[in-house]
Image (cartoon, rainbow, N blue to C red; front, top):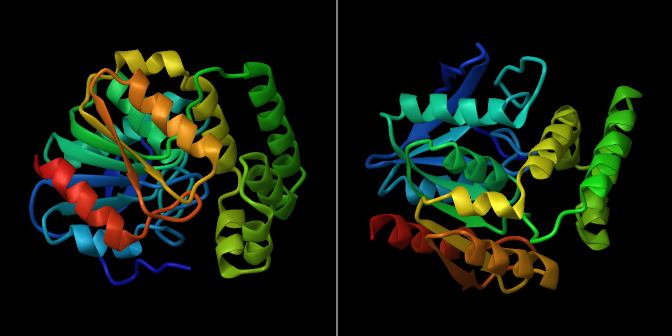
Length: 265
């Protein structure tokens, strides 16, 4: 469980009136971090990374809508998350770099395709495949919604994580932990990530002109690495960098210098 208590929470307001909570630290150009599904400031992979990046950037870390201290306004659409990021970029001075992890990369791609003022963005293993089975995606989202509507949040978390390919040994290590409870607390937002995934086709990448670094990990499986390669190929202005790491992750000490070099060039 990661704690963000040491920093002061600030807020900005999205287009639909939803309050978005964030923290900022460091000095330099604005760099916004976008968490993966089920992650937010209370439970985030960005704690150590943020501290390393703060030496060169003003780092903004926010709770995506429906998570942590951010609000939520029905009905949800992927455009609402784009508007949330737009509000945060405005709060950061009108332009920003973006680093996004996993399905957070879908938000970044959507935002860039909508023309938000993102100077550069880096994406770690964004889950975008060249061919989408839309029917299967809708069935998956419907099954997840059914569990959440029945109040079965633990089952919903299990269903989602297993469905996106989290290895069984990692799932076994998560059950019953504070991290698992943190995801349960925001389980309804897992549906949001399903809807963003369905809306983010491989073809959308052609509309993204933002300079982009796509990163994958040497320790990830073939499917994750293959998606990273094809995303880099589908973006008009992108490069691919493979870094030493574990399944679907790269250590802060390896990742931070790579991000710093890319954003500084």
